[in-house]
Length: 115
Image (cartoon, rainbow, N blue to C red; front, side, top):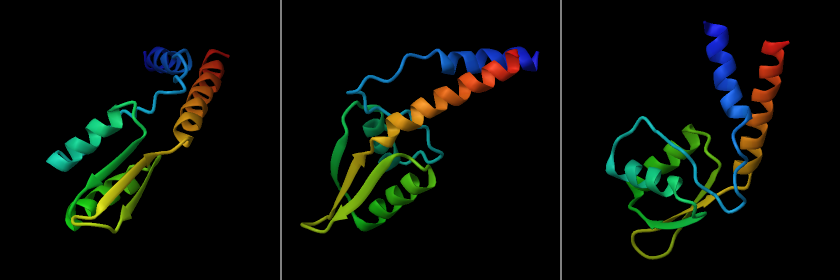
């Protein structure tokens, strides 16, 4: 039963269509349920690549921690201009590479389980 479940999950990953070149969306379900994390999750789910987000120091620090802790392919820097400062989020091209590598690993594991 476990073998069948593993095969089914790996097959779904391996056979998923590749990401479109203009699709920068990232599925993200974080542990934090605060409003600022809900806004982050909303941005991550969109196809848009960039966000300039005015946030106070505590909220910027929180988002930096969430992005670093989740190892998400999003560059985040603070633009120290105006008040509040601007948190710049940029989805990184490794998003596409990571997904392709994940699909390749799933295909290899699937072949090993079937072999």
